[in-house]
Length: 284
Image (cartoon, rainbow, N blue to C red; front, side, top):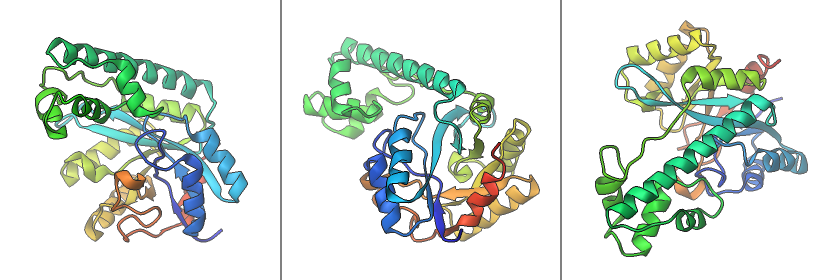
């Protein structure tokens, strides 16, 4: 097959604004040949997404974007994308259940901390605000603003809900090894997402990719909306050096990132279908 693809997108099941089917319809309108849904730490939208692919005649790829802690340099949170796995595989479902429980526990603790310092807020309020989406600190900020307990969204993060602040609770995330092992166990491909976003030097990115390769990493995003031409060239060079397959995508979030367009990013992307063909060849 020919045409162009997007292997990194988000729906309203995490922090995007499009429904899973809405993403498929938009991809079809834009003439894409294939698209992956890679919501953050959740597979909740995949059944609707895959059904929509069949309904609208578009190749849809099951995906996820895991967060992981990299225990080196300044210990950045890194993201590992899984593609082409079996969504209902036990290894994946079990991890999703644990992540969901850890997220709920964290949110409850932040509610308790905020209430204790004179900013009363309940899980019921933030859950209703999220409207079925994953609850994030942005939802806490919205409720606090609605209740006139703070003067701005910025105040929420600078004074209360950032690392070192009185109501902040760190996220529990998987290790890189756990992410890669889970993706492989479910029959998928493990890809390092947007390596340039972790505030690492080029040599450090090489080290990160090399270490993840030793854990089973299959590929890395060499095409991404925020890359300039040199960064794309650098990522392709590292992928070739380490025998990692190139991947890429827009990281489309709809209105939450209005400058990023599905498929084309910031008008700097045109990822050929051949990229997915090469990755798909690794699937069991």
